[in-house]
Amino acid sequence: MFSIRAAAYSYSESGTPALDGVDLEIEQGEWVALVGANGSGKSTLAKICNALLAPTQGTCFVMGLDASDPQNTSAIRQNVALVFQNPEDQIVASIVEEDVAFGPENLGLPPDEIRRRVDRALLLTDLELYRARGSYSLSGGQKQRLALAGALALEPDALLLDESTSMLDPEGRDSFLSCLGELNRRGMTILQITHRMEEAALAGRIVVMESGRVAWDGPPPDFFDGGYLRWSFEEPPEMALHHALLTRGLIPQGTKPGVEDMLEALCL
Image (cartoon, rainbow, N blue to C red; front, side):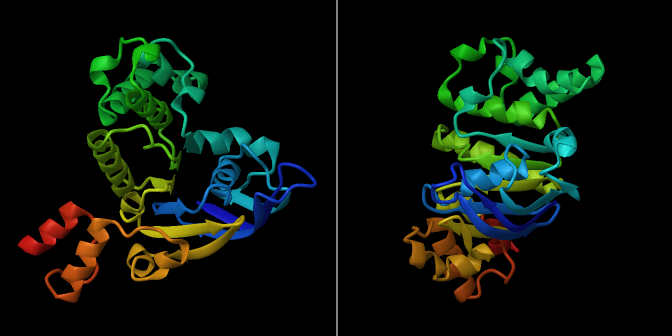
């Protein structure tokens, strides 16, 4: 899905580069959590993957298309949706369902297909009851789900999320992450920028960014087995429980660290 080689990017000629020689491969269907301190290059990397930015050095290929080539921009953005941290940066219509329909309408899809996509996106994000509501009247968490619904209505192959759970309450966050899990099981590639280690633990792979470079790349169990201490990340309770259950032989190797997965393994 994404093939990045020696990618560098600077916002100014004299400033410290936001990306400094990034090499990264992400396969179709992976769920990758991108973590690191503020200013480590996470958001810049996501924008390069969405062709919002072009690397000043190196290359980024998305589904085999060179993201630096303006002729590929439209195709890449149709297949790779980016959800920003601030949902208001993406809300363009005053009515919820009209906002969700904005992307498919710009693709020139027939009305019946637009309606199907809008209905599905509202269902997945639990916004069906708000479809006729003014988007300005939504809470911060609801606006965040609306931004996600707009992205899902494009039916992309990959979803890039930049701190997109930051405004959600715990219940809304759980619902959001459950939705991501279902989308990933259906084959969608997910690159999720997050500071929450309990969210990173749900991914199949964790990539740590530091000073514009990839500092660590591997599966969550290896990361939480001690690697996270180097960057002072806090181990989430789910991972501590997962490690304890594995150590005691109560769940089989390969069990994912999600609560539902561990409960299912315990009941076998």
